[in-house]
Amino acid sequence: MFYGECLGGALYIEDFRRILREVGCLDYRIVTSRKIDLINKDMQKVAENIYFYSVTIRAFKLKGLEDLCEDYGQVATYLGTIPQKSNKFVLDDHHELITNKPMLVCGNTAAMLSQTLYAPHFKIDGDRSIHYGAFDCNGSVSAERGISSCC
Image 1 (cartoon, one colour):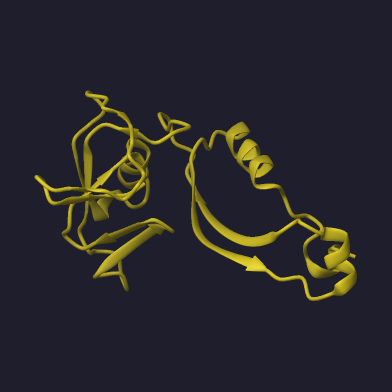
Image 2 (image 1 turned 120 degrees about the vertical axis):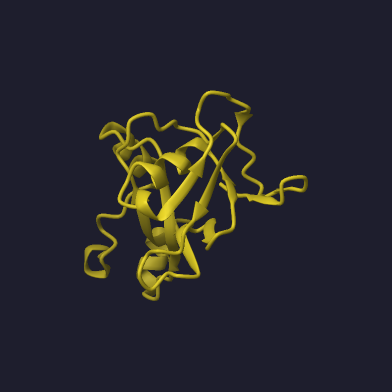
């Protein structure tokens, strides 16, 4: 029944995360996520409290990525050089980098932007020499530096 609706191969998100981890992708980013509504009444009864989502992700197999967001005080600045993305670049559902606006990022995000095809389009300040602890993923703003934080 679920195969006909293209849901037969759906994965539990934690199983998907484990598969990615097994192949060396410790951190992945959700680009888009959309809930799929079950219209067929029989399918709704079988699924009961199971929810299905269509999710587009970005995953990078990079050395040095950590399984949690860590703060190294790194700052990413998008240079506005990707065609059709001159004003902003959206890495994922919570990283919208505005051209020329510095953004405090976790170590993983800094690596994703500096060690991949995106490298020529970003300036990354800082390195991993000082560890400040877990990265604050609440989208706070550093008032003294005027740098938005998001991970």
